Image (cartoon, rainbow, N blue to C red; front, top):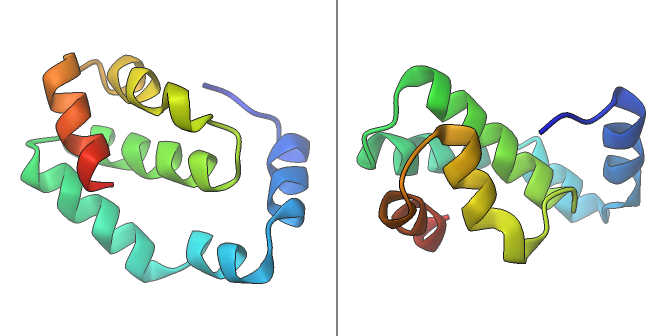
Length: 88
């Protein structure tokens, strides 16, 4: 899952201000980290999960694809991915 800086910048610019605030909120990162830790993710997986969530907020990851992206990018099985997605 790779996006150019230009793609990311455009996606951020299209977000309403409150969504931009959420995207850059330390609270958002804490919530994602907590979910990842509760599901036994490793440090590198926690960083990846945070990125996936941010890309989702930006509209770069479709809601219908979120579980499969989590599975693929974190190299985890579907039950664990579904558990993470349900909490996210």
